[in-house]
Structures are given as C-alpha cells and as structure tokens.
Image (cartoon, rainbow, N blue to C red; front, top):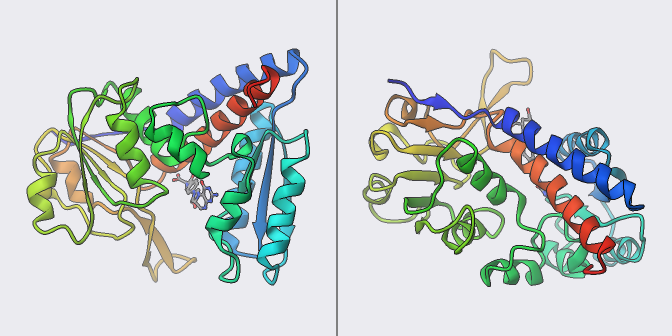
Length: 296
Ligand SMILES: Nc1nc(=O)c2c([nH]1)NC[C@@H]1CN(c3ccc(C(=O)N[C@@H](CCC(=O)O)C(=O)O)cc3)C=[N+]21
C-alpha cells in the first residue's frame, strides 16, 4: 500500500486558525501581537518567504512590518536596527530573515535580539531553555512544525525510535532535543546522524520515524526505510528542470520511491514548509501573551 501523504498545508491552516483565536483574545485584552521582519539585500527567495509570512500574519490578526536594508549594510547597521526593534513595543517578535549577506555575522545578529522577541527561537537563551525542557519560550519553527505534523497525524513520537539525519542548529539538533524532552511531542528514543555517518542506512532502517534534514537530494532512498515507517522530509533542493519556465524544480532530501515502503510521508511542497510559517506565528502570539502577562 503506498504511503499516505501528510497534508502540511491543511495542518498549518488548522494551527493558523488556533493562532487567530489567540490573537483575537490578546487584542481583546488590549495587546495586538506584532512581528517585525528584517530583510537585508534583495535575495528573491527571502523576499518571497517574508511576504508569505507577513500575509499569514495579516490573516491571523497579527500586525507585521518588514524592514529592509541594502545588501551593503554593515553588521553594526543590522544590529542597530535589531536594537531599535527590541525597544519598539509594537513588536513582540523579530525575524531577521536568513541568510544574511557575507559581511554580516548571523550569530551576532541573533545574539543582539532581546530573547523575549526571538521569533525563530535561535537565540542562545531560547536554545538553552529548550535543552533544559523549558518550552515556554520561542521554539525553533521547523523542528516544532515537524513535531506537530507527527502529533496531528496520529504518529506521536513517544516510545518510538526516531532517526534524524542532519545536525544543523536550525533543524536537526533542536529537533532531536524536542523529540527527547519529557513533554508532549517528546519521549522518543533519538539517533542523530548526518550525511557522513558510516552505514547511514543501518541506522535509518531501524527507525520508526525518519526525519531527513540534510539539505542534499537523494539522502534517503527506499532501501533505507523500514516498511511502515514515517518519513518527514525537511529538505528543499533545486534540481534542473529544463521543461519548467523557471528552469528548476524543488525536491526534498528523500527520493520519491520511499513512498512505496513508508506508511506516511511529507510531500516536497505543502509538507514541512507551511508548518515553519505557522510555528512562527505561534512564537509571535506566545511572545505577545508573555508581554501581556508581564513575563516578557
Ligand atoms: N530567520 C529565518 N527563519 C526562517 O524560518 C527561515 C529563514 N530565516 N530563511 C529561509 C528559511 C526557509 N523557510 C521556509 C518557509 C516556508 C516554506 C514554504 O512554505 N514552502 C512552500 C513552497 C513555497 C515555494 O513554492 O517556494 C511549501 O513547502 O509548500 C519554505 C521554507 C523559512 N526559513
């Protein structure tokens, strides 16, 4: 039986509707949740992603504004903008869209954020809280979205063996922490691998759930998946497609044939991507709630 496709777009819409109800309650209490997005330069993908995010904010009743700096902006200029937004009470969350130009150190920009306004959950204070199992702060959006996809398709990771392929600070490592925490969405047995792991297939074949977040097409193939396992594909890779007007198409880190053996898989689009956006909105209303309750 072919795998069922996980409808990330539908689950994300469900979460955005929950966020909209929370945003309405916050407005009722006198606080309009606000998100500030920062784009440095003219990267077309960044502009498109941020416009998806601000559109999602508008639909959920979250105020948002995008701040643009030229591609030549210095690190000090970016940090000055972050500090200005840290002090601006209209914004409860700040999103410096990545990647930043080479002259700007991304970690330095993230470190300059008020941890209470960290939309992505990437500030060291929030990553540290995550490691301590304190989940009241911002949680990295893509890992959080992966956990919600599992929970909301009846694939609670508790008691399962999850193999995460990819060790990035953005996805793989925070995901492994979330899955192993003693909390909702956690209690799994977690193995972290990467593309240089010897005998990667030996590990992935033992998994009840495989999450591929390696950033390389073809990382996970059918032979590497246990029959009936769940496959979550976080990868976004461009491959040449001369037949397309754009000249490329997007594929994940898993090959399509994993669908012949898995029980559930995420599609290349409409899977994890829309969840990343939904969880950004979750972090924004959580930050507004903390500010309202004086926990900011
Ligand atoms: N500070 C920061 N935070 C981020 O969360 C962040 C970032 N920088 N930089 C770039 C990556 C990428 N990212 C995506 C969000 C949504 C989709 C998404 O919804 N994709 C659609 C397809 C959209 C398309 O066709 O391009 C889908 O999967 O169905 C994908 C990728 C967030 N990122």
